[in-house]
Image (tube, rainbow, N blue to C red):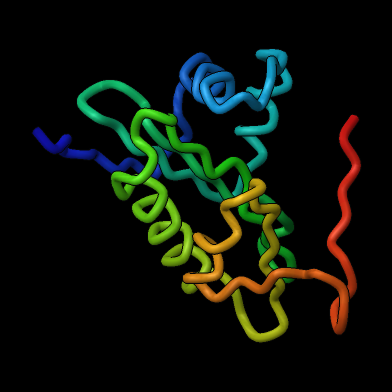
Length: 138
């Protein structure tokens, strides 16, 4: 039987968010750090199968020029079932209403997931002409 998903434009409960991160192997994160991080986001979207959180995504940034798609996470048991697309479609709707000419939207795709984001018009920064994308993990 195909699950019926419920989409909510709210942050997930912290404990569910932390568990979802653990399910995809993103590692342990402090509860206070996760709480502050979610509180300071611009936009949230969560997807549920009944009462179980199966996907989440958010947008962070300054809300004017720079937007960053962060933590698009789908429970591995639900990957390939349209949950990621539900998340990104809602994020794209938010961005369409919020961004303006001159805004930049960025993201870091997990290895092997680049083609998923290409469908939404994102470009891979593999060098020229934009230069390589970079990050630092602390």
